[in-house]
View 1 (tube, helix red, strand yellow):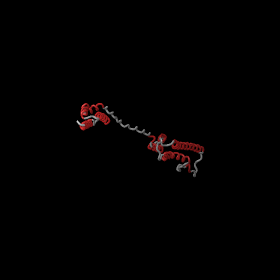
View 2 (tube, helix red, strand yellow):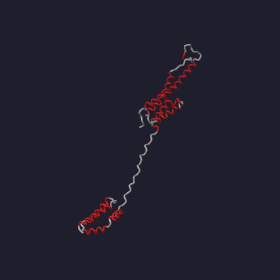
View 3 (cartoon, rainbow, N blue to C red):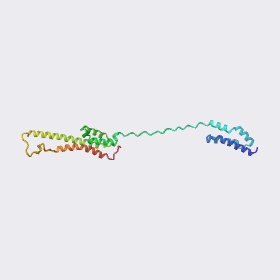
View 4 (tube, rainbow, N blue to C red):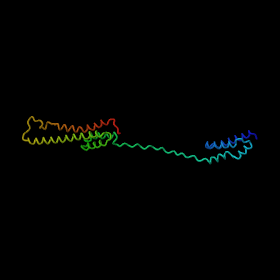
Length: 217
């Protein structure tokens, strides 16, 4: 056999080896092929044929290498962890709650006398959209003014009753229109009391005005 025959034997064997190792990892196949090329390097035709016979069938080499290749690690794709839901804002921090509180403070006392106003005052105090001084102004000022006006009206009524009792012997004169039941009289105390009660709806409307463009911190 000539050297040409030796090259043909080598190339044919390497071609069959490459085909058999097609499914092996590239690094493993390259190492095996490189080792076999070194063993077949420089051999004449007879020695080439003998060495190829000792190496064996390329398919058997590929199967043996496949058995020695460790299993590829299984890649476990973790399920995406959903972000925890954002905490819900308390209802007292919403604009709807604040508007309801202001309207209840303004007109609750007209729907349910006294109790309706107190409910509105509690709702306003719970809302997070107003500052403390705003709540104090809206709740305390109308309440104090109304109570003081009512007390002053009661006091003045008592004084008038006492003075009228002391002068019960004298009848009303023809020009005394203030004692005429057909002519209504409106004293300054009645005006103060009326103003005090008007402050209640005005305070709720003032809170609504202060609420414009405001959101919870």
